Image (cartoon, rainbow, N blue to C red):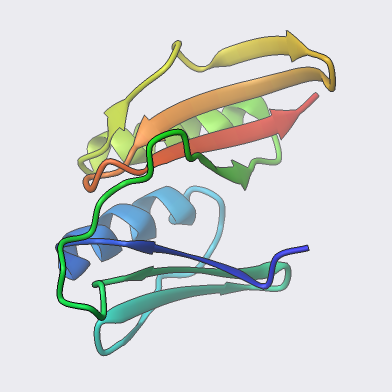
Length: 124
């Protein structure tokens, strides 16, 4: 459904350091830098972080979450730990199993250094 997701940052080097660590826990190679943007290329799509081209400060969306697929609950835990170690902050409930209308999932939530809400998700 999606070709790419792009979010904003106010500090590209900090964002690259954070996302290289977090996405590295999902076996995604480090980003390549293209001027004011960084890109993580995968067979299923592209995740990108950019300094806003309009010169205004980047801000996190209220109510938005970006979910990253994890192969296991252990990988979700490693993703979460890498995010905390790289300057992110835990949010929501601690990582763990949640049951909802779509079944059992293992969820781990973080906020990146710019305040974007992220989720590592493993469908059980």
